[in-house]
Length: 308
Image (cartoon, rainbow, N blue to C red; front, top):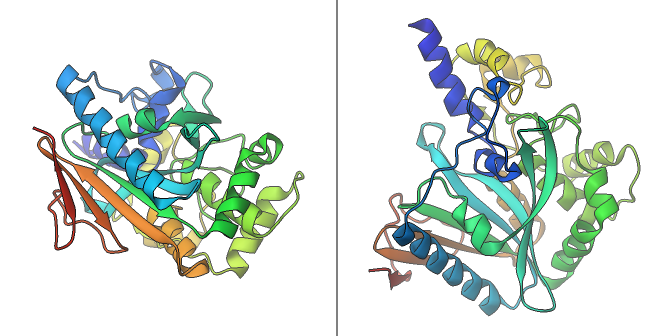
């Protein structure tokens, strides 16, 4: 019974960060991945149509913003137990031909290592775990910081210099031992806005700049010492990069989209946030920093697009 509890906890925490991106490597998983790499599910024609129309609504909002760079985040598994809606973030840029592309870190299961992956908006949107209920968050910055992030993130040598060799879903936000998808995004922001040059120690310098700029990843309350046991069952989960006090209190400082969005807002107060969600029957579009009501329930001032 105890083993079952450990695996259940492992499933929850292992999917905490970047889980929706792991299947993008094209791997069907392996015996060492404990099945968490291959979480993609087949979708029906109606579900695909719904997700495509959701992606069109997202693109329309981006185009209307007039920006060419944004931070995009998507929902994954239901992480309400951790009070988390968004688990995976990427840097989104628009090309001269008006094509939006998300640059992100994903876990390549067949190689057991992190990789960078460029993905179209429709593909990124389709990565939500539940085709019947999905959330996307967009943060659009002012022109200057948006341009700085765009230039830095599109510089292949800089983007790869920030990529760690070892992945951990629950990587400590201020350690270079491991890295998760959101950690790459926030370190890219630090590199861009700090105007930092490349080099072997670029991650250390990016994290130092983020500390000085008061980036504050709120602790995730894991709530169980079984995580110490569970971390031994998968190569995607580690604890030895976290401070001892955080491990003992089971409050882990992991970079998540909410912390990234909060940091952007604090750095550039005129940044705008757009949140969209969909159910089987509707799309809700919400402008502002308050979240859409759980269950994709529209509030005052929200726009609703019918899907049926």
